[in-house]
Image 1 (cartoon, rainbow, N blue to C red):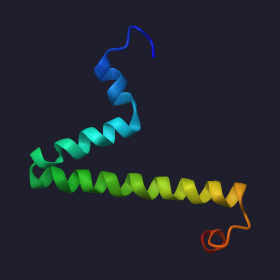
Image 2 (cartoon, helix red, strand yellow):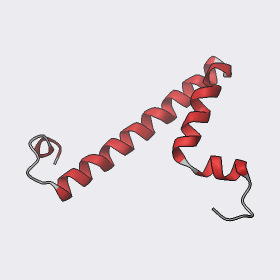
Image 3 (cartoon, rainbow, N blue to C red):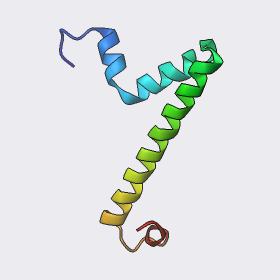
Image 4 (cartoon, rainbow, N blue to C red):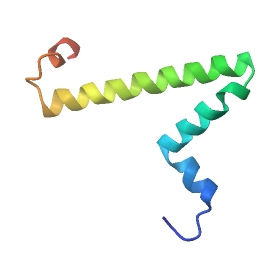
Length: 70
C-alpha cells in the first residue's frame, strides 16, 4: 500500500472489500438497482467459475469432473 493512497481507495480497489460494501448497501437500494446488482453478481460468479474450471483443466486435467466442462 502506498502511503498516498486513501483508505477509501484501498477499500474500493480490493475485490472482497468491494463485494462486502455491495452486500451491506444492498438493503438500501431500490428494486430496480437490486435487479442490476443481481445481474452483476451473476456475471461475476459465472466468470469466476469459468476461470476456476479453466485452472483445474490446465493444472489438474485428470480431476474427475473437469472432463465434463472441457
